[in-house]
Image (cartoon, rainbow, N blue to C red; front, side, top):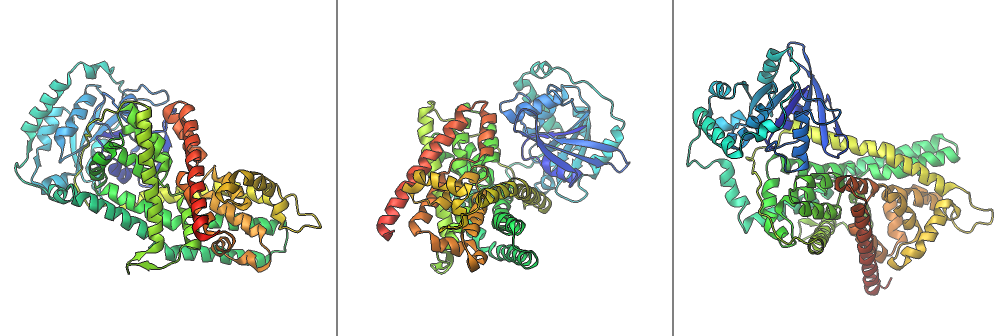
Length: 615
């Protein structure tokens, strides 16, 4: 087993992707929700290797759960995870001063090691000269130069691994070997090695520093950040229009083929209304979700996200958080689950807890299908000021409402939990570089595969279950309502309507809310299934947008959008919160306060909208 280890932003994961390609699997470490990436590759000499991409760490003196996992795996302290046979320590050649402390700590464990000088191309462009041969002598280990983002940039590492074959199993020294040397002594050794092996031009301002003069400017910086976020949400609508139409047309055509070639009956109803009507109405939003992920991955890969954290540190400090919470909260725009997990990089326990509790208020991609459906049905498609989409502006407003509500909840929780003292933000700013196409492609593929697996498993199962509940028992002979009205789902929806009628929800919406607790995007498929079964004649072939546009008053549509700004969390998020906090108290508190906010916001929205629209 080869373990890749290094500081965050050193190119370790890019090197892992270069070595393994698609021959990798992602899971979690036993007992925790920290991601575990493991892959396989074969060296030029034909030797098979297993490789583990460990979480980034600055030191083995762990301050966060991520660093604790890295420490325990390298030291062989985790049950079921043997110590690695060889450690490949990946360092950023442009920032050896920060990276070498970790290298020296790992060396004291006595494991076979290789030092991988990554980003040597960037270092050379900046005039940084590193004597790799002398560095190898100083450290007492092989040193190789790599450029993980270039094809073939890993070849020197492969040759070095072949030179170690066969790798003998070595037990690591106890962790006490690390503490035997003080941090001050380690830093003195780092400075001595740097003076002996590097030549770094002083007083020369690099490209990243020049860009930061503008990007981190107290006035221009926040404007650039707001503009970037605005453009992202505009693109989610405008870029996705064509592929969404293609998917919608394909699903509709497939439904027509099934109707044409199958006799009317239960099986045809299941295929058309249950599977195609439900799953198809969720699948159509895949382009928008991938576009959102694309922008997040680009901003992360080019080095902008840590700058955004610094820009927002002062604003977030006003509600009792540090700028470090920005990255977990931004991750929550894709999904609250990785956002909650990313909060473990926050050292202060109270800051970490508050970040976890507000992360689900960020508008995750699962809400996007619901927002898109309602906006398309009730907001006209026209331009504002000649260049902005009105629908995109409404979507931006919904995202902004989620951000403001999260900040307000954080302000209340920070004072409720105590500890108003702010901690200074210390965060490494990586160099700017162009996004790497292979990393983007792999990231988008992983997210598309996750979404499609979710559609093909959880959502498909829920749609079939909902179809069954919506179809049985059948309508009586003297029925005056659509058949679904007399079904088990109809009975459940009419029961819930007593609770949700004050906020404008009809019994069809109430039916959709129930499976939406398992996964929010299922609510769209549920509405597709419900309305396909509750309409008759030619209306069955109509799309969901005109159906709800003609069935709901505007006040109900606005109320439902307000509901989903605060909607009680999906079960997967609540389970992750339980695992991250090791308590049921916080997921229950989260579900309770979000339900109260959702109901209150929907009630006010519905009543105000009814007053101004007359119904």
